[in-house]
Length: 81
Ligand code: F3S
Image (cartoon, rainbow, N blue to C red; front, side):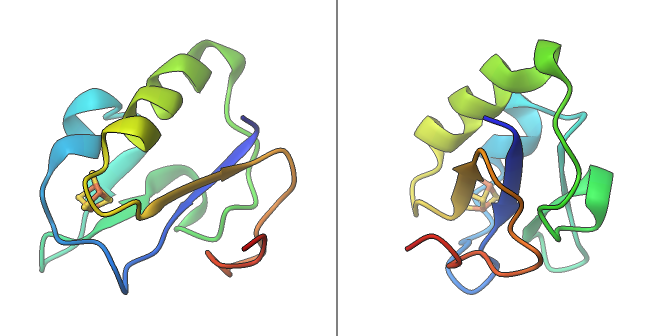
C-alpha cells in the first residue's frame, strides 16, 4: 500500500474509514470521504506506519470505495480497474 483514493461516486458516507484511519481519511460537507494528505488525488505516498490502518479501512469499507495501489492514481479512483 503506497497510495489510496476514495471513489466519491460510490462512497455511501458510512463514516467508517475516518474512524479507522483519521490521519488519512476525512469527510466533506456531505459526509463523503476523501484522502486528506493529497486532496483525494491518490498521489502522495502513505507513511509506512499508517499502511496497516489504511488496509483496515480498505477492507472495512462497505461499498468498496477505498482504492489502494503501489502506484499513484493521479486523481482517477478507477485507474487500475
Ligand atoms: Fe465512504 Fe467507505 Fe469511508 S463508504 S465514508 S469510503 S468507509
